[in-house]
Image 1 (cartoon, rainbow, N blue to C red):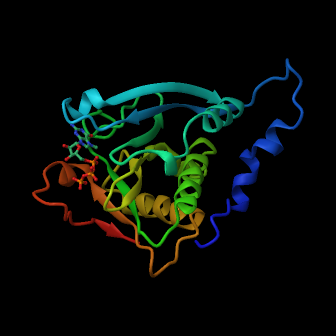
Image 2: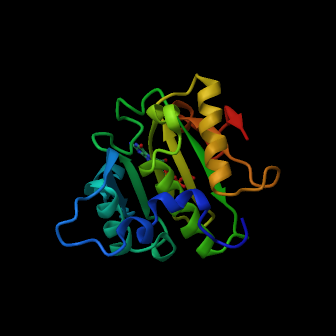
Length: 210
Ligand code: MGP
């Protein structure tokens, strides 16, 4: 993806389409699921769990945009920080029962991508989640994480499932398509959380690569 433009599929959730001159009492548009935003800031004095903070839960299109417009863009976050957006009731941690047997599609955002592209990728992923872009396969989608790191930023979509290859690959292809990633150059890996947890080095064997 070169331009950092938001995809046409995103328009159904666009702030201008949904929020054009709403009256003060206009009803809000409910989302299919409630979503919780989490923020992680790396303080080496504290454990990983204590550095993870629940920010807010929202359940309407309007509240999604109000939150998105209120918080820092990911390109402005410091190194070591994460945002996570998960279905309400699921923590963005391997230990959560909904994640225990699952894994994640991970896209390492190579340095050749601009910070603007990173913002666009993250916004597209958020819209895939709250806009339920995965259809029936959305039942296995728990949430997404963006990690801001000195070596490379990472965006991942966490699934509750790590065995059903057809469903997992369909979700992955949907993400790859929405991010307008290059089929050959921009690879996405599916990693099983169990493997990530027990890894001895940064090299984890991907279960699927697309
Ligand atoms: P990270 O933040 O996912 O990736 O995990 P980072 O910083 O890019 O590091 P790398 O190891 O992938 O190169 C960093 C560390 O945070 C992990 O090694 C764990 O110690 C801790 N951590 C990360 N996650 C997602 C969890 C989690 O779900 N549960 C617990 N207990 N610790 C985690």
